[in-house]
Image (cartoon, rainbow, N blue to C red):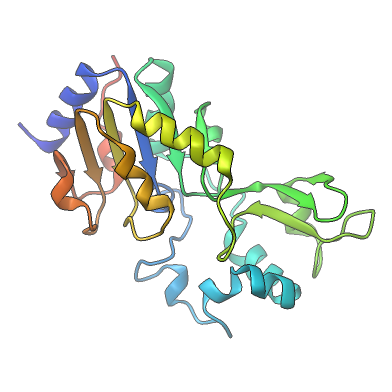
Length: 240
């Protein structure tokens, strides 16, 4: 039995599946990840991306933060790929109960998934730091220098920067979903970013499936390990 056939069997036999995903889920949609050879960490800027995407840098050099942010983080023309679409189908079929994602691109929702917990926020939501007024991603993309609210406050993306804590409500919902799942499918993540990666420790169900092109620190814990692009793998799964 091939790995994909084994995955199909696991999905067929369970109806409380949670998916935990990272940047690799969206690379097939043309959104660069951070740690691959051609990812953001290996591109040349005056500062490394993890410095630019920190709370301290945002507060001290907002103009430079937004130049990088518009250039690299706002990929608004990206389309959901086979992985996003299949997860949405599996949710409609009553198989997948929640998607827990480290991504900030909103592609799971664009594909039709409803129960999505965004650990690191979303580029699609932006709020004035002074009055709280909402602004969409198009406003951010077409603004100049530091985006400003009509009240004069700075508009900040609803994304979790380095040095910032994760949203407590999102964490609690993610933990509850993972802890209650029969199957946890982990895909497109190196499991290197904490505290997000630590959430899989709450899983005590039947099967853990790991789908990632590269090795992860949790490979030995997987009941099924597939080292292929996640869209390619999930695209072969039948929904029944």
